[in-house]
Image 1 (cartoon, rainbow, N blue to C red):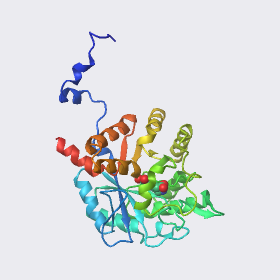
Image 2: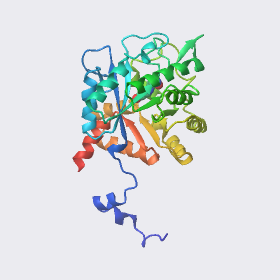
Image 3: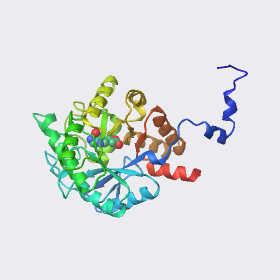
Image 4: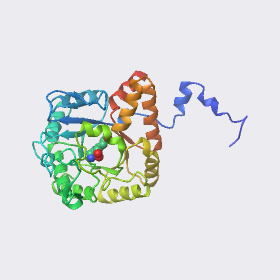
Length: 327
Ligand code: PBG
């Protein structure tokens, strides 16, 4: 490579069209997933105070929001449910008449082509708020697997296009895959929350999903933020067990993990731009401290540049509108 003054990198930075021509990372709405919260405890949409602009929806109203997303060009939604009753084994998570099972049917009736992905985890459905069944104050791994499999199967039977286990139990991807296959759903993919860290960035979500653990924390199943080699082992195991898409979560503080995963594996990789990442930006923007559109696009570009193919983000509808305004 020749050096200055033969080479001048500013030559290709002079105009927007030159810059677009050589852009290495492009944000397209095609790679976004929009999370939606559906609650049986409310009778009309309710804004989540820690996530300005994001609502809990009723089983009826969520179909309208899904339709709005679809019309904006968002290809997929990711559903989280808040049941009317919680118990120690999360019974309403895998009930035919559960909140998610009903919501899937409603959404599919209104927007049949929109991809409906469901979060598979017990924490919103258990009275103790942990992601698995408890014995001796400890979240039990193996007894939880059959409940997660039952939950996945009931979502798919209700019409879900893909399931996304977020519980971090060992062996759950394999268990879910075998259950779906046995029941004839060999073509339904699994997006595994493979490297999910025990993160303070989930704080606002716990209000949104009413899923805060009632004792202790999630550190005995979610990953330690200090580790990255362990993330690669988590991912390798999920791939062996049959994951179709792998995920790193959260996104912003884990860009190195996203990069390492993309370098090491060749599966489609999702990154979850989680609730705390959303709320921090919203708070600063609502105070007039930062330029929201600019910051959001920069953050999302960073996540893509690090190696994510898919981004799960509460900003998805806004991104869709910003991209349309640019055209
Ligand atoms: C359920 C689950 C959580 C999130 C996604 N699925 C919360 C948690 O693990 O405590 C977090 C999403 C977000 O913060 O946006 N287990």
